[in-house]
Picture (cartoon, rainbow, N blue to C red):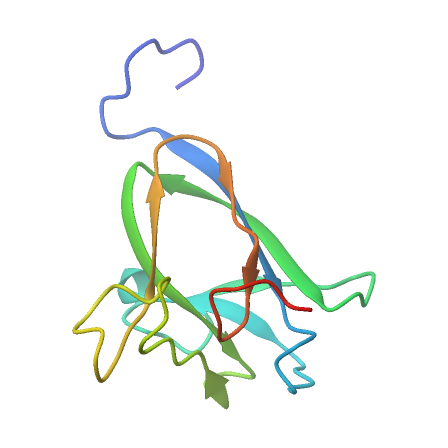
Length: 120
């Protein structure tokens, strides 16, 4: 709430997701974030790439706390597989792994689709 000095659990913070698709070998029509917050839905938080540079982005108001998610393309036509990567820590990490973000205020990500390192 405007002017609040303490978060009573109802405050939301801008989280900007940026995912570089240029190393993925994919040519997606849509890119979005999905997770338990929407029952692993096929649309989740939609991202966009208006300048066609391969980096898809979106800013969303989210509450404080842990956010489990992964990037998906074209309504589940393809999705990240982060098993064995350092950024894929949620779930068992051996047969399935997702990303985790701790929302502790306004924050921005710089991810590479399907991997934990930057795209070269």
